[in-house]
Length: 470
Image 1 (cartoon, rainbow, N blue to C red):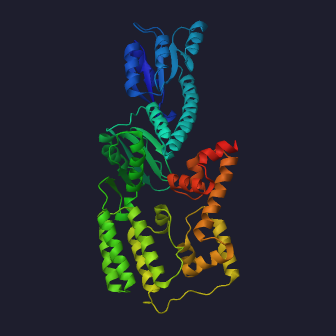
Image 2 (cartoon, rainbow, N blue to C red; image 1 turned 90 degrees about the vertical axis):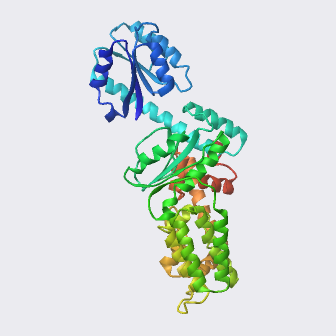
């Protein structure tokens, strides 16, 4: 909803305008009213409305003076002049001062609705470009980027400092959470970022928790500058995925990393695999699941555990490890919950160390690989991994890795990455879609991970690639 401020020195006029329009259905809400220009200017500085309806003739400060001063604010609103004077000179002067429209009293509902419809299109377009620029700045890693980010945040009414924090909320795919306080930006198919005063974050998260489709919310630490804000957002993003670890929705706040716990888990896991001690493996798995349920480890820790397990397993057999996952988004695409991941690791380890004699990799020919490769080309934009192919074709992951290396000269992971980044390049060249939308279409749920991989492959950020092509 866009906020509207109504300014008129007569109270009945304000109430009449409030009542004659169904603001909510048009995407607006009346956030305040003022009865003179000075009061209106103070209101604009504190509530930052996107649209101001103002009379022209008011005591103290006229509507035209209000438009002039309001247009000098860091985030100036759209002005609509309302007056009982139909002279063209008033309308012309108002438009010259920066007004977007001119309406006459008494109000006509259809006329006001038409003006609001045009304003909403303009505001939507401005927000589209502003959000795109903000996301781009949040991926920059240099001081100049931090300065630009701070300037951009000030346009949104935010001053990075000890009182600012980040909230990332995760919802079921296709669910759109209601807008709330602070700056709100969609950063993925199912995630929304909010930046606001730190002491408001938990209240905002509680409101989101009551909405349909809620999965999890992560709350960052308070940050002191724009550089810290980037790290705060990454922290909140990771914590928003804690529902994967605990198996249930929840709100998760930043705490000091339990690095000692994750190191101990990896040490025990490696010892159990190295000694082929299944009871020790199962005890270790139970301990890890308990840490998951208590949210004492993060999804990044889960990814670390997963990759460590297969590194240990492949080192026992001397095989090349292409079963590694590069992001926790991949991990969450494959497994519904962290406990399911642990169960899969247990199964793979027990098969790998020979505790399941009936298991063995199936020998397949090139025709099987062609079928598999066709499936990869048809599905690389969705969640796909070596584990996906293992479950579909009943072929050992080691053998799939060997086939990819032999037939394509690349690892499976490199092959998928090349397909996705190539497709993303095509979209950047041929469409005007937001980079975040292109990331989703190319198969990346995590916007930030996509930009890192894109730069690794092409040497440029997606925005730089698009600008160079243009």
